[in-house]
Image: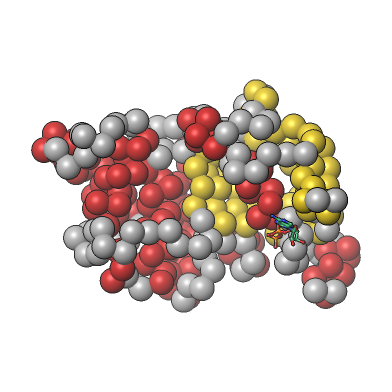
Length: 249
Ligand code: ADP
């Protein structure tokens, strides 16, 4: 179903870990319906920023706004309820559940259905078409009834993307969606993100600069927890400060 893409903004976002400032006054502006990349050397603060945006970490200072509403410090469930979903860099699947079962669980979670409903005929009928559609979208339909544990690495990443999409997010956060993928899986993932961007906002952490160039409207470069540069990819990648930051890695 159609979703209304969210607009994301941070102002002076700050996160310290016992005196060490991992995210240091970040102002981020992500327009609704755009694909926005976060890039930067290791340790730049990208993961910490994602954890702040999803409520897994509380900021030490600053603000986070979704569609102009202050969501700073809200717990992960509350932020999820406002339409923010995330796919993780590390895989978090249940090896023995099938792909269909994974997607059904995600759909039931989205709709707030309790566990007694789980596996009832009614639930299965209700979610069959949507489950197949999601698995089709990520190129996994022919593996629908296999256990997740039997999938190849790139397929597991694709399943995780399906699980994030199952939540019908208005803001989709992707942590290195193409990491460890072969060329074909990378191309499929890029194509998929292109398609889903139509009715949502996407923020991704991505090291593959070809993917960043192919997909994104704007790029924010982080270094030492601060915004080093921000703008369209073509502009940012030619910025001497950005080139220096990467050479220094
Ligand atoms: P990136 O994702 O860009 O590689 P991170 O956000 O993982 O960067 O880390 C930014 C910095 O914050 C690093 O120097 C890291 O060591 C530090 N850091 C991250 N999480 C913690 C933590 N829980 N405790 C202490 N330091 C942390």
